[in-house]
Length: 156
Image (cartoon, rainbow, N blue to C red; front, side):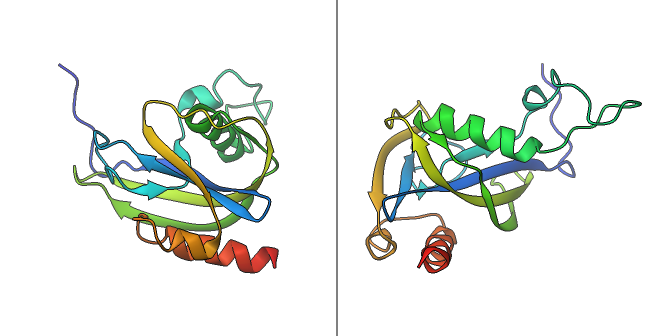
């Protein structure tokens, strides 16, 4: 039996608003997801040790790595949507408590679309490219609309 995680330990998550031709990619979470089932969101997910462990160390004397959030974010966007993104731009961060009691630290970014066609993985059931105004019609996770509006203002 797997030992439960210590609820003082945080999950670390990176998400990205992908921008293409003035529209934002939003995805709908599967109803089987533990957190925010059936809600619309931006692609992203947890940072894992696999995102950096096999990379060369950033310091010669001990294991440390730079730019891990970007690596994890690019991987998550690719896994969830099949898309490649340009360099992510930091937007904001937030912390929330999952229904199972575990805290999550989320780093939100925005990035321009680079290439690819949307191909959703099993965690997502639908997608849409929307303007900031159109996003208001979707059942988004709290805060995502504000992030979309903020990026829309940055790009205007």
